[in-house]
Figure 1 (tube, one colour):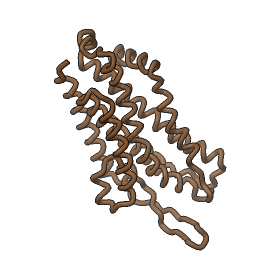
Figure 2 (figure 1 turned 45 degrees about the vertical axis):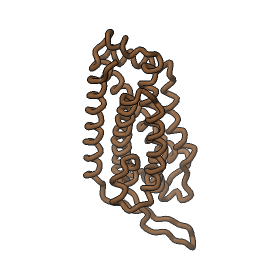
Figure 3 (figure 1 turned 90 degrees about the horizontal axis):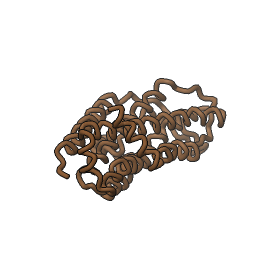
Figure 4 (figure 1 turned 90 degrees about the vertical axis):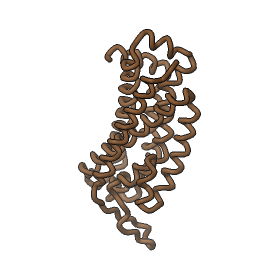
Length: 244
């Protein structure tokens, strides 16, 4: 498994995957800002899930498609299966993809803290909601990554995965403004129903927003983890049984 991961890392260097991992935290840094420093972290943790619902389905499609597209374009799949086992090949790609997702989420949450330091947030960093948001973001990202990897294995073409990512981002964004029950049927937008902040009060006269905590959605988080595991198993089964 170590050799398989090393081989995938060498391929990733030529694909410049690190640029994709850096793009999301850069967008967060450039996009996020706060007018009310007293509730800035609350506002940021409220807005991050919406931003993730727009960006992450497309970013996960990019990562998954680049991870497998090199083998398809180079017609090296059959050769690879003679040099290493399918289990080893899949393990290397799954580990690298998950590692890239973990790096991206870690950088995104680190940028959230950096914003507080640079912009002088006066609100105390809410440690519990902050960690919960990071865990939920990671879980949904991993689930989306394996769904896109499965599409790549089925079609051997990046276009279906990218199209699903783009459409999923649009549907996920719309689901943020739908009743909560509807959003549960839109996995691309699970960032929003998993959010732990909501608008508690908005003063129209002063344009002041007050944010409130809502209970952590452990049930949906557990379902997301189970769905990610099911998609992982389906992707492995597809690679194991795929004829070349």
